[in-house]
Amino acid sequence: MATYQLNVNGAHREVTVDPSTPLLWVLREDLKMTGTKYGCGVSACGACTVHVAGIATRSCLLPVSLVGERPVVTIEAIGQDPVGRVVQDAWVENDVVQCGYCQSGQIMCAVALLKHTPKPTDVNIEKSMGGNICRCGTYFRIREAIKAASQRL
Amino acid sequence: MQVRPVGLLMAGFSLTFAGGILISRAHGQVRSIAPGLAAWEQVYSVLTHPRCINCHTATDYPQQGDSRQRHFANVVRGPEGKGVPGLNCAGCHQEANADSTGVPGGHDWHLAPLSMRWQDPNDKLLSSAAVCRAVTARSKNHNLDGPGLLKHHEEEALVRWAWQPGRRTDGTMRTLPPLTHEEFVAATRRWVEAGTPCPPGR
Image 1 (spheres, rainbow over the protein chains, first blue to last red):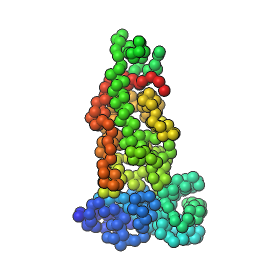
Image 2: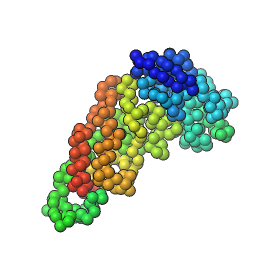
Image 3: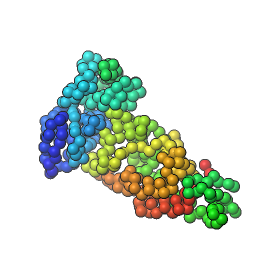
């Protein structure tokens, strides 16, 4: 066990865990922030996506020992970000969600895309969102919501 | 048969097949370049190992594993070889290997540029001659001359990673290139000192 000082959603958090513990489980089990979801556990579905130093990161495969001082932003705080707020509003207005399990990861990836590319093409969207799987098949509405959000950025 | 001189160090050299033996003429001296070519073949054996060629692809995506299959999760090359926003290499590959999760890592994880592809679009390895020409073409290799190539092989973090590739997701160790890093650097040095000769042919 080791103690880590983390910056999560702008707040200082201290956790004492095994160094190999994935950030996902630190967020969910130790910090009780359950908005970030466990999907596949092997970085193949994107449900666990958070931002680490602004980069969309699969938290299920990131040992907490490698986080360091980099700020972590999760779905719980993305609405406080100007781009995140726009994306979440677009998600609601386009009624994107069906079961919703993958959607926190989808939103975190969409925000990462729009922060870098405010006016993405369909190809941009397909490539950036290509690692996020939705078993409900909401891909079309996700794309429409991203386009709607981009209109406001 | 005349062979086009390759590499900065070859300036003023000429390569000639004479009686089936490649020789170089430089500064009035005649010497075999066979040792240099032999050193290159050792270098080539490393460059085409999966630890190296998986990120020297000819495709829009990296490969992974000793079988060099397409990288999972729809990972793509991106404009700078670092993936795309939302799906960057750095979204999984950290500054160091994560042996507990099996994700390899190193500083500035990225694909080599397409100009440094060492396979064809059908996933077939390029020949020794073709890779050698690409590696020594300064218009393709970030303008590296012979000493620059040696420094790259000796010091570049992602090159060195190939000898410390960490564990796979099943906990077993990833395979290593056929030479040690020291042997690889020594072979590169011999090749560079021989004037970075390239074998003839396609």
